[in-house]
Length: 79
Image (cartoon, rainbow, N blue to C red; front, side, top):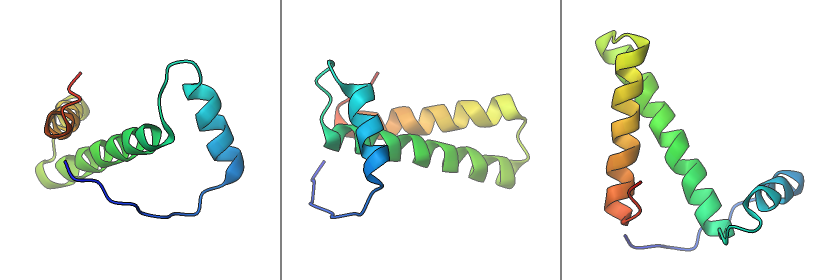
């Protein structure tokens, strides 16, 4: 997947907390932000699936999880 610089303003306390959480596992700031955006997109997919299909919560969770997995596969970071 192509990447591009995208300057954003973030709360410094939030950045510090994210860095502290990732400390020791070698996760870069970029990876932390990408992971968070992936989770956000998965949650949005969950909301959309629920609104569109009237799925039960468990079914909507499965749809959202599959969306996150599909996104990760496109980046080569499938888990």
